[in-house]
Length: 386
Image (cartoon, rainbow, N blue to C red; front, side):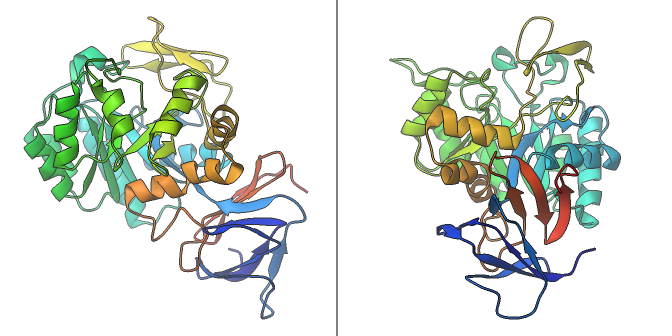
């Protein structure tokens, strides 16, 4: 354990009000106590002569990493492997994601998350159930055998209050607005996705309390001239957030740019939809009754359908800069502040500001993660750094 109270300083510090040069971030008992021009006491100072201090990244959609998938092994060991794999790339908070599966797998995953949160596992802030209440027409690689209506068994899971932040992705044509409202009432952040719904159905779900869209453009009814579909409705709606997978495969750069230009400011968030190969050289892995094969940084099932990604968060930030033409600060916000706002935890994480949790990344000048801290404690250290 490092000292509980200390300062961090680097040539640039990204605060909630913008960049500050050579600022000192005072960390006390896991929180940011001050951001000042100089230390005002004799606490230890960790000085970095280059690079930037920025808020840690928050990934809302993480299926796996480090060679493991949460669905296949929903255990604490899997969570820790995923955390280690993604920590290298700046993730300091994640929602491990369970894609469409049996109720038993969902229950085991929920129990594992509850245990991790009870024991304050650094980096685990909740769970994302992506399915099983989806549209067969837009299922992607989700196994059709497990796609089903919302039943009492799932309700028992979604009502649990020991899971941290809860996100459920569903198709609004499969879950009525009144049920969406009930999910929201028990603390679920409802995302819309894997859906063939028309615009009216999507708007009814938004009115009922849905606040997000899962991997915009992918697995959803497209924008057309006489029927805006889920894509068009998502882009127009000013109050909801859209996750986007900027890996160069899930959407064309122009489609990404359209989303950025159309969507209200602060409402796009970078997600990885990461599968087990992230952080490894794994070339293929079993996936339900089939397998997924890696081709460079593209993952497909035997039919050629995209099957998640090998994207990491710091690469997503870099891709946002290149594809959207945004500043580094704005790209970082898409990976930190924006998801924190969506998840309702912006009072705790997502920005470097007094009173917030000290989830911090030291990023070098090549935009590689050298170190990170969660609640002021070391989370990742690049051993190549000297």
